[in-house]
Length: 358
View 1 (cartoon, one colour):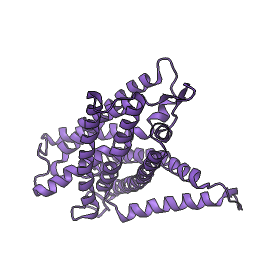
View 2 (view 1 turned 120 degrees about the vertical axis):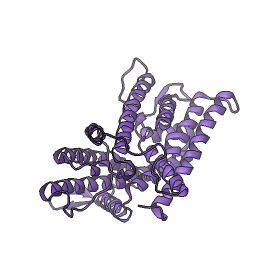
View 3 (view 1 turned 90 degrees about the horizontal axis):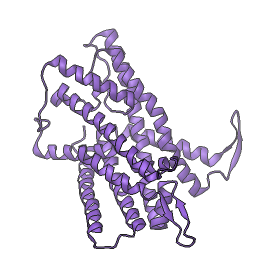
View 4 (view 1 turned 135 degrees about the horizontal axis):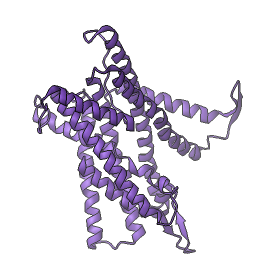
């Protein structure tokens, strides 16, 4: 977790420096207001198309994950209410998934700490789950790396955020400070929730930590409600760029029709958006393995979107000469991240499609 946080700090600093570039013909400053715009300017249209594939996969994958998470959190609320009405021995349906929001982190942090204090002992160990084979442990470590990679999707929105900043000081300086602070706070909550959760439940730690807590039921329900509310907006954050990407490419606004109660609407836009949401929901139903799906998406998209393209843009922007010490250090950084993400991709794929899924 700390290693990925450090990697994210480095790549966010590299990407922040790519916000302003110089027009080679006029010499004027050009502001790259989005991630894709920056790739087109620095690396060309072919790289832009390749990044568009990974970006589309990431945005669609986030829609799937958010669908899984929201559904599981709503089931967890129903389960908590059922246990409160019928007692802990009632045959209430189980749920398994996770989510993220500021309120959720704080509530989960407190619940985990309280559970450890109540137990009076720290469960689990530094070696992880004890009742698995060495091969299973390797795949689970790989899957965990993918989950962590998914938790740091900084590159997708960094330039858009930087474009909203005022100067002086320079936008890149402000963005770097903000990135370091936000990554530090986020990592603190990630580590706190994960460590307290494992200390509270040991080898029996559920994929969704909230499902391990029964009381106070209202607080568990509130935490899950925070997740659902967070995801209602978060789904739009990831879905709208996907819609815009496709509609700009294929001209979704060409055919209009008069619809009852809706007025004039774009038929192609209506069909694509409906099909996209339906497909994301169907995939979430077919692959309801939250941790494994998160790991696969995170591992597959982290290196190209968060490492490779930012590194190549930084080298182009800074005109770093090949085979110099600086060039070698940056390329070694990229290669190391590629190896880690490749390992995580294999382990996560085994979790989704192989016998390791749970």
